[in-house]
Length: 164
Image (cartoon, rainbow, N blue to C red; front, side, top):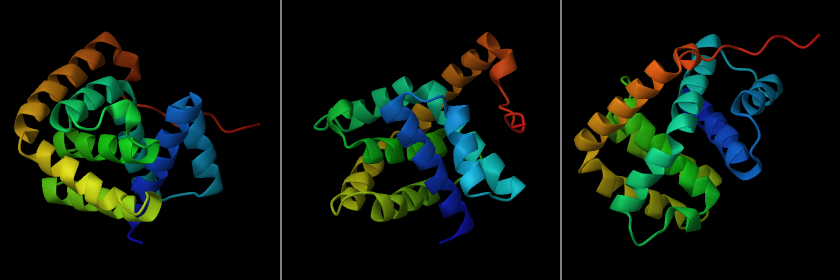
């Protein structure tokens, strides 16, 4: 598995845990990184995804529901829902991820973590979202910027302190 795919997989596991259990994202991420350490570069990538997606979940879900209306977001399998959130976040807010890469990586995650029908479902939804990704990007960037202004201390998540 490619390094960034592995990192996305870890971000997916964290977001899945947060989604199902309500655990704090920082705690869930810390536990994953302790169990499976990554290079500093990949750890930063995972943190960017997790702390990029978490505060925007409702907004990401809004766009997923809007462009995939036959699937209410709350009825989408949690693993698929979080793959879609990661991919939409990457498609619109991750400056280093080309659109096609975000879609392809999401399909790969769906093959690894999802059901047999997940890759096709993920590809279809992201194909619909891709048609509007510039409009979605503008909206999500404005929301993310507003959140940073409202919470300036939350803009750069730090590593939790080492356990004693």
